[in-house]
Length: 313
Ligand code: NAD
Ligand code: AKB
Image (tube, rainbow, N blue to C red):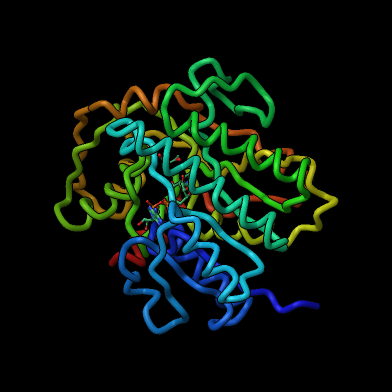
């Protein structure tokens, strides 16, 4: 069997840090190359190789893939929903061209596997709000959602036409304590923990009754690894899989935090991100991921809150 050598692009980001560390446990530290535009995250330092890399520079990316004998790429570099609405052209450019660069190189170099995350942001105001199914009306209203939906079909195309084994998950909003989120609409669900511990209060940019699909990072990392390790012939979806973790509103997470930090208060000052949140489903049906590769989340709101507070403290 050929030894796997993995390149993680966007390794200093919210998911990248934890995913890189998890992949290093599987493949060995030396066999997982972390890369990013920004400097190496503190938590990655000393744990394995790091290269500075711009995914938009296809030539340099190609050189790295050949030089390092890369067999798998995890592409995490992207502009998320809230930042994307501030600069739609840049978001489209990075999210699309970055993916096409990776898919082209994967085809040319016959990489074993590629991972590229999509998002629940592909769904739009006309999609079902509750238990949004794998296959349904999908009319995204953010540039981020449009780029993710187009990206899903590029993945499907490269798999069907060139046999590139590219796999994808539509992550919900991700909650983590190790690395900070990078400009999404669901970021409030991370900020709230930091402010609760530091100030005992939080001012939320979404309304109290805004329900969104969310997931705790350990579940997201496990989902990613389980999908990437699943036998190819089990996978019936080559666009991107729905996965669910939990669904809650700002009011509900605030009530859960109050159980651990009595006296914690929250107020609501909705901004432009409210419109983005309103366009997304409240909860996700992930039965296809369950049937194809056995996906099952472990963390609910209560367990995630307890774990977040314990670790942040
Ligand atoms: P993030 O913003 O925290 O990290 C992205 C990383 O990519 C950053 O470290 C950034 O410096 C790097 N990057 C940006 N431009 C680059 C370039 N040109 N070349 C190389 N690196 C570059 O994002 P994240 O939350 O870790 O998200 C990773 C992926 O998961 C993205 O595709 C995102 O859309 C998707 N996703 C995230 C969430 C979530 O809640 N975090 C939910 C759904 C989907
Ligand atoms: C965002 O809010 O943009 C991300 C996502 C759900 O894709 N967290």
